[in-house]
Image (tube, rainbow, N blue to C red):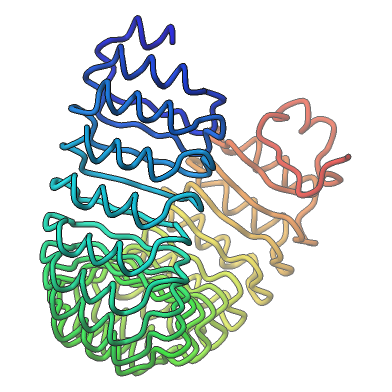
Length: 452
């Protein structure tokens, strides 16, 4: 309340996790007539009374509202928002207390809405159909954990929201290829798409995106077991501007798909793959040969990727970030190729590489002077000697993880602390830190396990 009375020019207010109540929110409405952005996530003490009064007071200027885990904020609040906040551009809702009526009223009353993010288990197709009918300026739509809407709602979005650029579908079990086909046909301006755990969406839906959405720049497929190679083959053919591709637990996608992406999407800058066991050297070699702009590569637990793939990457790309955690076929030769070909490397994660040794560490130290973060945890062959070579030239190092490295001792930890003037975090077992190192750098040492 004090803030509201004394800061009348306030434009943005983030109250996430605060114990503010209705009186405080009402005071903001009375005193801050220029407020544009409001975050009420996890403000559990609020009710409709506070938000309604705020909307009445400063609704004319309000553009962004976020609400989550506020059990006493219901459709009544959204009806007030629709009545008083005609300039609203962004609404984020995570609530079990919101139903169709609230979303319907906002869709009908806020014609400038551009961003809508919903995690509301009681909202159905009826609300999404209203969004598709009235929110013709919508650019960003995110739907999380919906159990009560189907392709009918997504078809309405495809039919009406022609300006849609960013779509996230997460754990929406009743969506199928037909819904995604409707988006592809209707939303040709789409640039970003994330499909996460929607188990009825398969290859056909993604093929439609590849054929109809040429401006796609970022694609994330997470836990999509039914999406196969032909989906990414169409993406490679049709989406020449793709810059980022994320794949997690996509068991039906293999080297043929990645080869088509490499040849068709030569502007690719970021490739993140995790636990896609059908992707091996062939696909990653094609990336190295064709995607010269690649700067961020993550291949976590891709156990068919070996040194040959990293040699091609080192010869063809200048990486800034590399994560090959758990790729057990990668050893000194692959990391040496990265060290010699990627002098701008800033972040390196080689954890759980059982065959990586001191020679690779010496090469990284020699070739990557800009390195700021390195993760060496669970690397059994790396010793104090390799660590010493690494930090000798990597003087910009800020973070070093060395837990479960039996070859690294208290002497190695002391070397890191003494050789790196910018060091901010060293993660290590407590028993490997000498009393002298504790006195010298207690603020930067983090322990895997702490005493209770």
